[in-house]
Structure formats: C-alpha cells, structure tokens
Length: 239
Image (cartoon, rainbow, N blue to C red):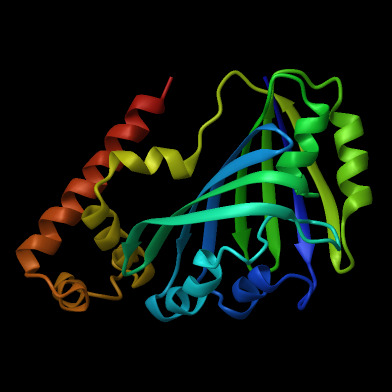
C-alpha cells in the first residue's frame, strides 16, 4: 500500500466552508472519504472546536446545498444528503452521501478516475489548510493524479506535495476514537483545552465539572476512563 499525502491551501474568500475555519481558530475537521466510482462518494466528518465556533459552522456543515467537495472553480453537480450523527458541546459528526454526480472536480472523484481498485481518503482542515492522505494499492498512476489535481485547482488554491510512502498499516484518528465513549471524549477535550495536563495545572477538576455541568465525581471518573483507554491503545501499538 502507498500513502500519498499533500496539502491544499486556500486564500480567504476562495471557499465559504474553509473561510469558517480561517475565521475561527478553534475549529478542526477530520474526515474519511470513500469513492469507488466517480459518480458517487460518501464522507464521515468530525468537526471539533469551542461551542460558539461550532454553532457558527453548524449551518454550513448540514446545509446540503453547500459544496464542500469541489477544488475547482466549478461547483459539484450532484445530489447531496447529509445526516447529523453526533451533536456534543464541542464536537459534531456528520455523514454526507454525494450521489448522481454529473460533474465534480473533487479529490476523491478525480482519484477514482486514475486509481484502480479504489482508494481511502483522510482529510484534515485547520485554518486555511486542508491536508489529504490518500491510501492506494498501486502507485503507478500517482504522477497523473498529482498533475491533474494541481491543474484543476480553482483561483486562490495552492497545492503542496508532502510525501508518497509505502506503508504496511494506516491509522485514522477519526476512526480510532470509537474506543472512547462520547462523554469521556468530551471531558478529555475540555481538560486538554483548559490546561488540566499542563505543569502547573491551569484549571481544576472542579472547574471542568462546572463547565460541563456534571458532579466532580462524574468528571473525575470519565477523565480517568478516557486516559486509561488512551494509555492502553498506546501500549498496544508499541513493538
């Protein structure tokens, strides 16, 4: 297998969805895409950030008329169906199915024209940058894919190659989160954001509990369970 990784950087005003991330520093999006055929693809996207920033991006995330796929000057001509799977204080997870694609210059649909046997895509959005990881079985047409992606970019977008590496495994942070329950992930996110793990600590467990609106004992239990799961996962990954 091969991991083809690159970044696309957006100027302000080039894409309304990316603009939401440029304007709100706390927002981060992680998505998994699958596209076996240029006429259809699906996306599982997790967006995290401060509650006020998330509320501001909710409409764009769930609006089925918003084109979050195209990298060219033309919007995708397709049927888009979006469902909200998870709604937490600091996290949203949405599933989007794009079907009946008549025209769509997106990374997955372009790759589907060149890569035999399909590909898996991981996408990360922060600020003005969208980072793509493409997992393929064969790297023989990666050069054609690279050239096509670079040529199709709309005005205000720039392409930066990172690496093409042969790999024997491929991990996704979005998919691996399933090991941690939603309420545990929520308290862990607050603890990290507010500096609970800094030295000295910048927030107390009582303050975290107050922010989440739960008893201190509940916050303590959820935080301990979350860190225990992460520690087990780390140990399991060691050679």
